[in-house]
Length: 305
Image (cartoon, rainbow, N blue to C red; front, top):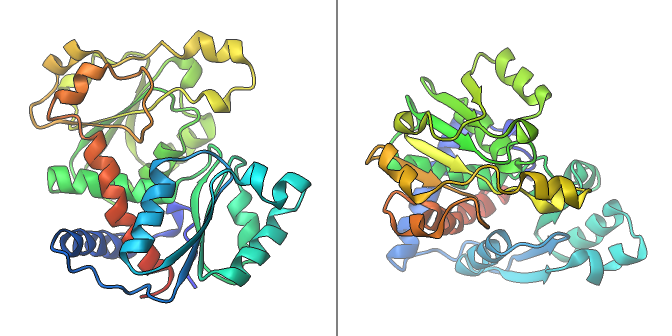
């Protein structure tokens, strides 16, 4: 049984195997040769927090591989969590009905608690501002697919870094590859937490923090933008004060390399001007599609197939 809870759990050999399987899944699917390796399996998709891409791509991945789906889209309201059931009891029940459980929850650390009682593989589809490992893998896959490599890249992360579980998930994967440099570009109010910065320093990662989005754009191979996450703010006024501070504007494209790509985990709100969508360097919709192939590979991984 292989749980997928955090990208920190994977070594480079495992990462490379998952990437290779993802490329295979994409090729098989595009050639209409996807094997029904999950035939007679049931995948439970339980989302205590809203989702479009993660939930639907997981369900599509399961269908493509021959599985059946049981799901709860608004599980905080339409499951027994509404009545006060603990996550441990919910997990026990889900494991008794399915072969693998995909779960999203707004509270950090919830999936760790669930693994204590789980009898079937658990896949973390996002737990608060903590981790989103399958997003981390699809982001890594996108960079590899777009650039043909994962080494010697200059990558900028822009926007709400404080609350970004996607950045927390991608960076541990990228740290397995040499020669990369990272720029963290955000308003000071939305900078990466200091404990995370300390861990990067401890591991010898080359990085720089800046409060300006424009200056480093000519150096970047990848710009990874994030939205200001309204749902992580307890005070509405705090959100209003920062939501418009970092916006990627169309004219910034003139500063970027022709070979650069712009990524975003989506949904995007106003942090990237809509005109940017038409530029071939805007990779975020291709990135979202890659989630299907990667999640097919991760479902297979979790069941050791």
